[in-house]
Image (cartoon, rainbow, N blue to C red; front, side, top):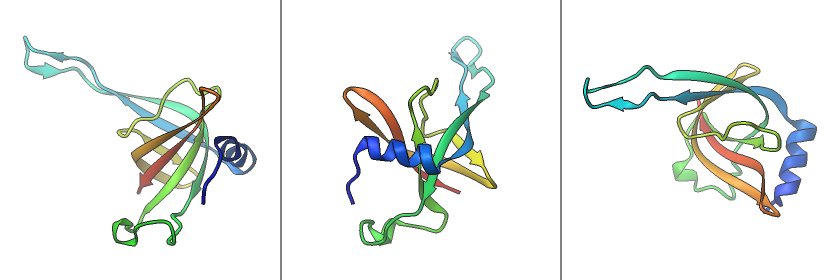
Length: 117
C-alpha cells in the first residue's frame, strides 16, 4: 500500500502517542589516550505511531518476533533519529534498525523507522 507523506503525517497527528526518543551521542576519539570520551543520552519528546508489518507486502522470511514500524512526525522536531537510538513509551522500548525519511515539497514531514524490541 502506498502512502503520501502528508497522509502519514496526519495519521501520526490524529492517532499517534507521546513517546521519548533516546538519542545517543558519542564523544570524539582521542588518539593521544587511545580512548573515546563517555557517551551521553539525550531524551526528546516525540509523537509517533507504531504499526505491524503487512504480511502481503513484507518478505515473511525476514520478519521476526518483536519487529514492527514506527512513524515519527518530523515537523518541529529538533533532532533526527538515527539507527543507534531507542524509542520508549506506553510500555514499549524498541531500537531503531532502519529509517526512511518522507519529504513533501522539500520539507521533511515524517520518518518511517523499522524498530525491534
